[in-house]
Length: 220
Image 1 (cartoon, helix red, strand yellow):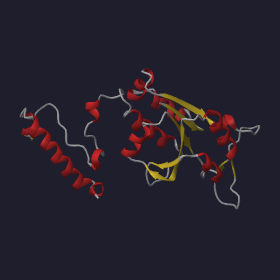
Image 2 (tube, one colour; image 1 turned 135 degrees about the vertical axis):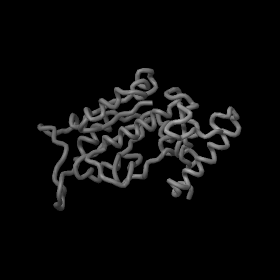
Image 3 (cartoon, helix red, strand yellow; image 1 turned 120 degrees about the vertical axis):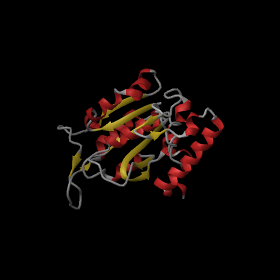
Image 4 (tube, helix red, strand yellow; image 1 turned 90 degrees about the horizontal axis):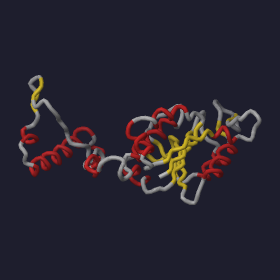
């Protein structure tokens, strides 16, 4: 998989790519990630990428030319272009799994008061990571990269991905480790029983119980 991130602030994502699982996936050639500053594609002498909105109003709007130039330069027949915007479809685990089937993803990070509406003609999908406003799309891009790359075959062991939160619209089951008792709090007997059939049954029951308590909306 190849992921290109179009951003005005590539340095805000660089550190994230050099840590832990994402770095290992890159080093093992499971994914190629490129940070592209679309300011470099501005046709203006001062590399300006924004301007005041027609009709008036507060803030600045991202101009068409840099985005069109950048996407037209890097796009391939396999590209899937995603605009990160509060107006987009709500991101979830199902979408993360869908994105792993894409060979080339282009993530377009916004800033200022948004995009010139014509830029949307370049986009295959608009995505939002939640009902709140960020100063830019870089945090959303990092969230999508992290949640997608970890699902690529060979990045994390299959066992670690089994029965995760949001699979089957259920949260994950409670987990414990040593010591078996701490400050009067004991690990449930079933988990140290050695009976894997009972353990699996307990875990599934706890997934349902936890989801009903904490996220009943998932069960609807």
